[in-house]
Length: 321
View 1 (cartoon, helix red, strand yellow):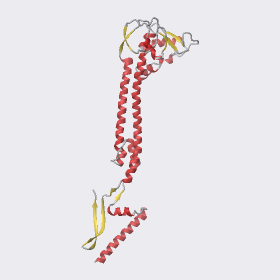
View 2 (tube, one colour; view 1 turned 120 degrees about the vertical axis):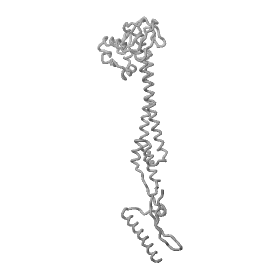
View 3 (cartoon, one colour; view 1 turned 45 degrees about the vertical axis):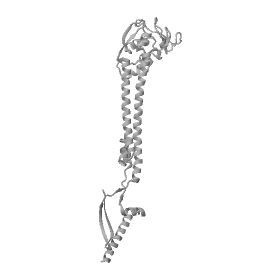
View 4 (cartoon, helix red, strand yellow; view 1 turned 120 degrees about the horizontal axis):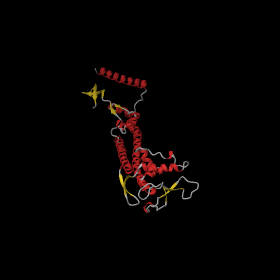
C-alpha cells in the first residue's frame, strides 16, 4: 500500500514538473527565481498592470481621474482636482469683477447725468460723453482742410453703445471732443454756446500746417491751474489735461482690463493643470505597476502531509477575500 502511494505521489510530481516545463517552452515564460518560487508556494500572485496611456488621457480630460484609476491613495489624485476647482473659481470670480468694472466705466461715460458748471458759474445737466458734441466738432474739422488727417474715414464713432464705441472714446484722441469738460472749455463761450475752435496747426505760426493740432480755450475763459493750463494756452487734445473726465474714464477701463487679465492667467493655469495632471498620471501608473501585487482569488493546491506517521496526499481549495 505504501509503495502504491509513493508511486502516485511521484507520478503527480513528475507530471507537474513536465507540465511546467512545457508551458515555459510554449509561452516563453522565464523560470522564477528561488525566492519568487518559494513565495509562489504559499501565495499565488498576479500582477494587474494599469494602462498608463489611459491614465494620461483620463487626467488630461479630468485632472486627477488617471491618478485615481491607477492608485486611489496617491496624493495627486486629490491635488489636481483641488487645483482645477481653484482655477475655475478664479476664472469665474475675476471675469465677474471685470464685468462689474465694465458696467462702471460704461455708466460713467453715458449712463448717468451730471451737473456741469460752465465758465460763467451756471450749472447744466448733461452726460459726461455725448455724440452730438463729438459730431459737431468733427464736422467742422473735416471741412477745414480736405488734405489733412481730419477726413471722413478718420472719424468712425459707432452710433450705438457697443464695445467698440466705449473703446474708441477712451483710446483715440480724435474722439475726445464729446467729453463735456473738453467741449465746454475749448468749443463754447462762458455760457456754453458753441462758438468754434481756437486751434493752431503745430503752433501759432507753423508752416506748412502740421496735422498734430493743439487747442487754446475760447476767450473769455477761466484759468484752470488744476488742469495745467491757463487762458489761451495751447493744449494738445491727446493729453489728459484737456479732459480729466477722459482720464478718469481710461483709469476705470484699465481696472476692468486688469480683472480680465487676471482671469486669463487662471485660464492659462487651468490648461497647465490639465497637462501636468496627464504627465503625473504616467508617473503614478508606473509606480503603481511596480508595486501592485494582487491575489488571484480562488486557487487549488495539492500537497503531502504526515498523518499518523504516514505520508498522505491532500487537495485543498482556497479563496481569499
